[in-house]
Image: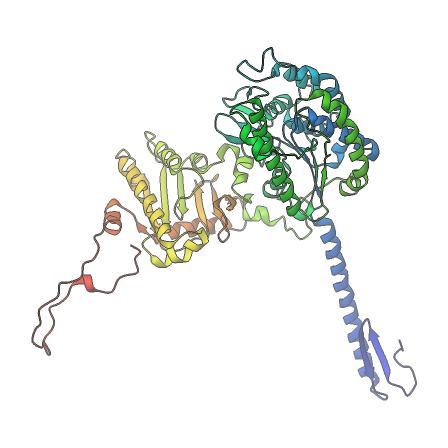
Length: 622
């Protein structure tokens, strides 16, 4: 680059970065200096911009969610020695415990037995020894088990062995790894998960690992159903619905834990397969309820579920992020064939581990993962207390995990002491309306209480409101109006059934404006009051509604603005009474006027025809 003041007759180029300007010879020196200053300032700004871009890229790389590693372990009885031996051999080749390379372990039946050991950091070599030394005792058939009623095998021996293997540990003791064990509730024909993940509703981290393994491995006809301590339900093998839990694991990670699909990596380990199926001719020869027919149906059910799960898991995660470790058996090995499993599967497992170790080592590096929890530098944390924000719930599932004492709306309402205002569309709350009404009744009927309740629903008699909001709720406008009217009728009936002293303290209204979101104002004029606002995005399921809660502790005045806004919204609406609903909901259909006889011209005279039934229809929704 030539410098200013160079004495030659050629044009003088002045550049800064990619900027370039040519000054003709003889230009005024002061003009040249101004131009140089201008471009130097531009260069400094350009450096700042590039510096900010580099900082953004660095932050993007550091703050983006990192990989999430899943271990899925299928069911298969004593063939689980394949999984234990595979992992033991893999650890030798990687020179590291595989528990250090996994974030979520999901297991079914024998896979649950192995998976719990991994999550609890019990050496997998101990599990290999368990299969080798104890399998014969576990699968020692009951005397005359083929003709006696009940299962083939006694669980007492398995229970004692598992309690010894897991050393009395509970699911909550898996502190660095999330674990999920599948089972099925026999009494209700429902799936069941045992887990230490708070976001999974209904799970119990206080259950012992031995109990969870027993509940997951109680294969029908092989073992009796398992009834856990302090629970009324009986559980059977999770393989009846999730014999291969890979797809379940991905859904839990993505839906309940918020893990992006492109960060998920899956290692799915089977127990060996012999895909012969059965011919239609042989199937027709099976006797009903014979051991052969029962086993065929179980194998068909387990095999179809496994193929479906593995196929769709591979489709969901990015290409190359899914590894299936399994082996093709040369003959059929039953899930209770101890001799066949112990003699064939360990060598096949070591071969499979040797062939996949390099790929697994790359896909499952030994590094800490912190998916989605890194704090970005642009987060303005001081605005949280300024707004008085006390909680944010990304979906309704988080009520159960982060607000256990008030996980449902009826429990939340029950926490009010002085007053409660509820502004909603149609009281679609996720729980039965009966629970909400009963809670309100109990609060209002307390003798000597001055507790007040105000409930306002969207005015169902306004067509434009129904037409505007119905698509967001995936409803037809008439369906939305009908649901609101039914809710209002139930509220009016509740008010009529209250003692006379309580009725004035229940206000039922219909608002004429679409609110910011459904709101519950708990003791909102008290120092310990709070306001929760819930909403959802267009056509999203109600389960995915999000919410935030604020208290009057903020310095911004945001709480007061919300409180006044919702008070004004309800005040500007209409009071709903039984008489109003009778007129609006049950009003008779308008009838056309009878045809009048022909008259002579009435020009110049006022017509006496003034029937309101032929006036233009109002905008009210029928």
